[in-house]
Image (cartoon, rainbow, N blue to C red; front, side, top):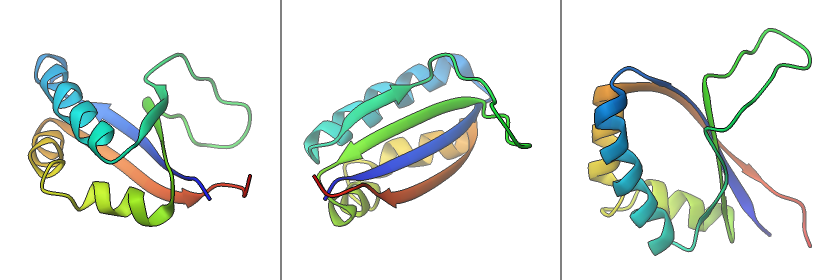
Amino acid sequence: MPAYVIADVQVADPARYEEYKRLAAASIATYGGKYIARGGKSGKLEGEWTPNRLVILEFESYQRAKQWYDSPEYRPARELRRAIAGANLVFVDGMPG
């Protein structure tokens, strides 16, 4: 069953965020993940949440998504992101195919 990582990112340093994107993309590919949405236009339909930069990743399973997030390949990107951006991230199981 697929799983998704959903991130709402508040970028403080756009120039350094470009380096984060490069590092993150390589690590995501290593774990078989793919981008579903990556910072495109978004709009609020209901409620109080107004996302900033919304990113959605798809992995083959919840376990694989967690492996990616905790991986040595993603660690440098994660540390860079934490230094240059705020973020809220969640994992969620998808629907069986």
